[in-house]
Length: 113
Ligand SMILES: [Zn+2]
Image (cartoon, rainbow, N blue to C red; front, side):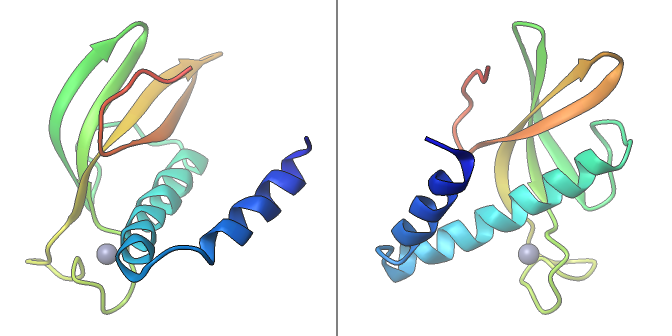
């Protein structure tokens, strides 16, 4: 199966979501987008603006951080100085050829490949 058809299948499945599931996914997608944007910059984990690190764990050769995040969408509950942050969600951080990589893990901590 190609990446493309997996993506199409995922999109088709999105139409089967109920309202609560769709809302949850919407919030989680905000977190995923932020993680990917962060990844495309060269920032270090921890103490990043708009993020609050709740817990840190080392599993294998990766660092896992439980973080509450600000998605950056205008008008979102997380916006502003006293906004309610999303999450917390787990993110994995590791170095690959000296480059810092990160990946969204989810609400439950689990070891990723
Ligand atoms: Zn938000």
